[in-house]
Amino acid sequence: MNALPLINPVEVRNRLEQLGVTKEQLLEVVAAAVGGRNNCTSFDPRSAPGWSSWREGNRRLREILIPLGIGWELDETDGIPSVIHRERKMKITMCNTDAGTGLKDYHPQQTSKKGAATEEIVSVNQSLFGEVMDSALLQNIVPLSRMNQPGFLACWYLCVYCDGDEVRAELSCPIVCEDGYFKDFHERIFLTLDEDDGSGIKVRKQEPDGGDAGFEIPVKRKKAL
Amino acid sequence: MKFNPSRLSIARKRRMLNKKALAGKIGVNSHTISLWDKGETEPAPDNVQEFVRVLGYPAPFFYGPDIDEPYKDATSFRSQTLMSAATRDAALAAGSIGFLVSDWVEKRFELPTTSVPDLHLYDPERAARTLRQEWSLGEKPISNMIQLLESKGVRVFSLSENTATVNAYSLWRKGEPYVFLNTFKTAESSRFDAAHELAHLVLHQDGSVKGREAEDQAHRFAASFLMPQADVISSVPHVSHVQQLICEKARWKVSLAALNYRVHKLGLISDWKYRDFCIEIVRNGYNRNEPNEIEREQSIVWEKVLKALWSENTTHLDIANELAIPSEEVGDLLFGILNPSVAAKPVQSKPLEIVAGQEDEPQAIA
Image (cartoon, rainbow over all chains, first blue to last red; front, side, top):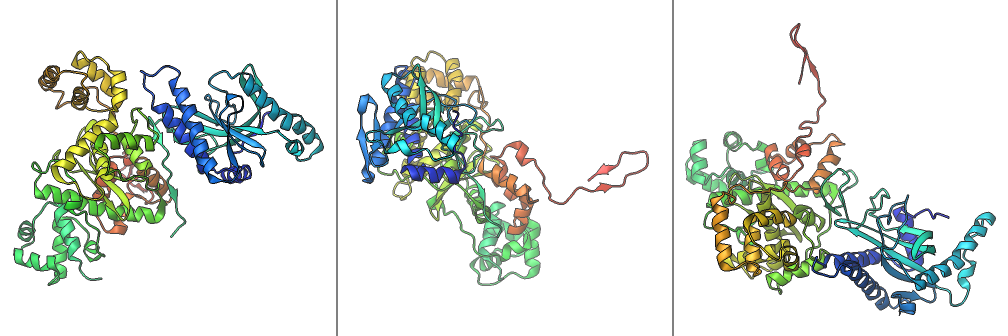
């Protein structure tokens, strides 16, 4: 099953609202992760950019959501830093992903191989969504029934890809993780510019017409005077 | 609408004419100009036609409402001593025209919102680091200063003052930051100027620091902002010769002199080596002809605005017509930082027509 990514800005906002987060909050986390990566120089250990991005991203995720007092809590189960929401039965963690992030014809993969804990988390997602989705599609019903099972938390990954000035991000729910890498997703929500065409552009972007680099510079025509 | 003396003053300053010089050109005495300037008397229509002839501004310009003017005390020029009052006033008057254009555009377009913090409590180096953190830039080189500023809501215009004594200036107006860059200088210098003006915007919003001290602070900020300490030290830990700096400066897109100064300040080269490098830079003419030049940075905001306007058959000439200002004033403010292919695009919105030529000759297209 290849989940069709959610791209339309209105749909994205609505879906994020259902999940209890906003696009702005997640973009703050993305910016922190990018800042963490950019803080590193060639004198840092080779793994530092990824580690820094991961550390800053997850820290900001917690800094933003937990103080809101709307049910988000800190969680560190199996050594995976996350925020959990028991009522919503979900958790979110930030991870660094590859160039497939934010592109509808590809999917994100972690930049480093994950261990058993991640595979376990993703298998929970699969048990929540995978089989139910397949049967639900056949029967044309909404696949949410297993979400009510006690103790099950659907795990969402805030996937962040950063290469120089190009940054893409998506909030996604993987359901297959093989050999330590994501293989399939139940749902992908692109964090793109409102005016974007779904090519997965976020915080900063390469100019498509060959400009050397670009920052997010929205310019919109107002309605005619 | 009544004659507006402040507009006469702006047009006169744009042409670098003092009252006496203008009086001489239009055949009145300077006392008359003073009376017009103060609004005590109003020029006759014949006089206004003379303004049009001498200053090149259309007559309706002189009957418009007041225009905001950048006050010289609220702006920062780096080379005060080298710059004449006329040059300074012309550059400031360009700012007034820039406000007109900016207001015209903002009525029609939503531009990026302002996100430039007040960091006046920080010393310049710390302010540069803080701003980099705030903007998620970390220690990485900045690919494009103009676009970075635009992304943070700074309105960037070009100054086409044909002199290197006017670097750039910046100011806050109605809560929005403006930067005017002189594109007569090298691309590296303009980029440094942009960082220098950013320093004024974040460090000197309250106006408590002025003059030489403010300029020194802005210089230190710009050097730290463009060439972060940790990135420079890790990228060029050992500096042995000028050619190495010529190669390395591409990373931060700065001038050779700026990088030489920076590596010296960071203790990567000794005082003696710095002095030798300075001599070598001058001897080889690198101070006049920048080696390993970068491409001039370009605005994205103005490109998007102009392209959107073209789709409605509106060009910069139409903007000039509507604002009753010379079209070259609009061009000077925008084209210096525009992609040449955009700046060269349609200059008139009326359709092309075929003009009959002589027989046996190809027909001319006007």
